[in-house]
Image 1 (cartoon, one colour):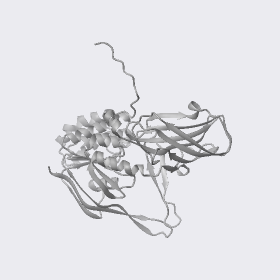
Image 2 (cartoon, rainbow, N blue to C red):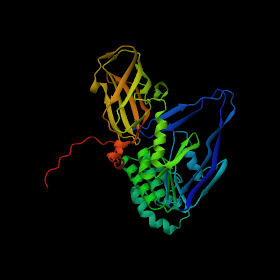
Image 3 (tube, rainbow, N blue to C red):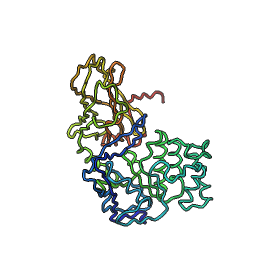
Image 4 (tube, helix red, strand yellow):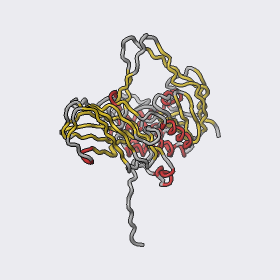
Length: 418
């Protein structure tokens, strides 16, 4: 079989410039909660004000055969998005060589390649023309694209007026349906709702099975296993491993388990500042043997929250919520429901919480935390930790990989008749 993508010794350098006394920051927006909270992480300033070379990728090499579906995984900052931008010719490498056989359709962020002043209809034809397709070829796929995107009523409206969900649906439909030989997709599907995400993943699987090449970046291990046969694991801009999908995920999960299980909550952004009566300080995983935020399917999910109380709290309520990466709330419980507390005097406390039978299906989830008293919010963190549920023998035995829902609760079935 012929090679669709060949990468040899690829490197990409960015120049970071620091100003004396300035505070540099970057914003990581995760559309994983219903209020779409922005997480801001502050970086250290370079005191001497000099420039700094940052190598996003270093000596990356691999080959992808025609018709393969290949995943790319790695922690934030590993170089995944930079690699896709290089393959999509959005930016150029500093060193190395890229060989691509066939037309490439990329979906790296919402509306990539769309012109905001043009209508949805015009952007479909524009994207097709960029791919080198004839108008007749685009017209042949037009109705299928519109039906998939579900934007018929707004087709002749400039896309600058589209909601992010409409933008996303149309952008994905165009990329997946126009006749490119290679489809490159970053993990942007969290913009859509659960039904749309399922629809997109199904379409990507169909694209791979049709003989086209798929390159897919995701933090969702279960989605990767449904679509991909091989995987590329990046660590700090370098290729750590290229192998069959399950072997790479096992390696990634093992590394994830070695990560620190303690999170400094005092530095995380709040949805609101609260009334100042309490403040959460630290979050710790209680997983046996490692304390990271990577759990096997079916294992208890336990964590503890350390917090300060500054003023006496009457009838305090401490709780958590678990969300999918699409912002759907899956579970939530507070002390008021399970273990009511009459009063907390000023001081430092630790609350331990254990969920023995949650049975989250393999995937990525978000943990939110909150403290309230007398019906008033004291402190709230919408994105306290990213929780990874990984497959194991039990999930494979039960066929969990064939289920789209995030939960598979124990259910009693009774069959009558026959």
